[in-house]
Amino acid sequence: MRLTLLVLLLFVVTGCTRGPQSNTPVVPVAPQSAQAPPSGGEDDPGAADAEFITTESGLKYRILRASDGRKPTAANKVTCHYRGWLDDGTEFDSSYKRGEAAEFGLSDVVAGWTEGLQLVGEGGKIELELPYQLGYGARGSPPKIPGKATLHFVVELLAIR
Image 1 (cartoon, rainbow, N blue to C red):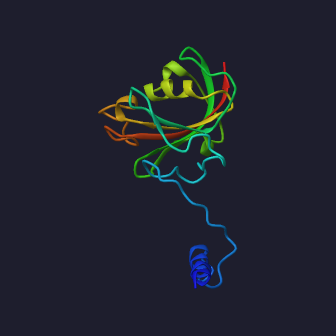
Image 2: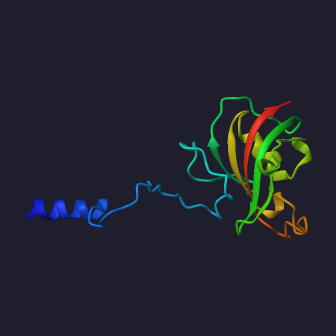
Image 3: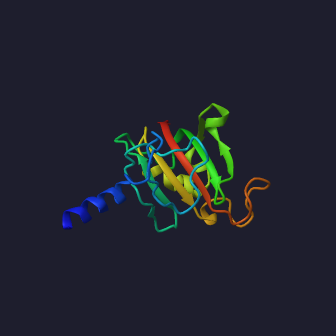
């Protein structure tokens, strides 16, 4: 009797009682604090950090691709590919869509980027969640970014200069 119940439970848990299924594998999705990145911003398999870490400033981050490469300082120029979106999933910027990586001084961007990119090594990939105080503040950056908007980014650090 116990063996029959065990086999029945195994069938139910593994889905063997559901009949024909598609050959498409089902991949579990970890919960996130906001909408997933717009299409094309998928995390790398084997993400180094599954959960977000929060810094003293309120920046939330997780490393998507770890790297032993050197980390930039606020004084460096960096070259990155990135995608940015709002809480509702609306993409407001993407170097991927432009087909050209961006280069900028790390001290010349919003505070959340200055802080966050110093946490990932060259060749690494990081996901950032910036509270409005570390982004565009109470005023935002109209028309794409409203005031007090939480900003989300996936950033690949390609090079440090």
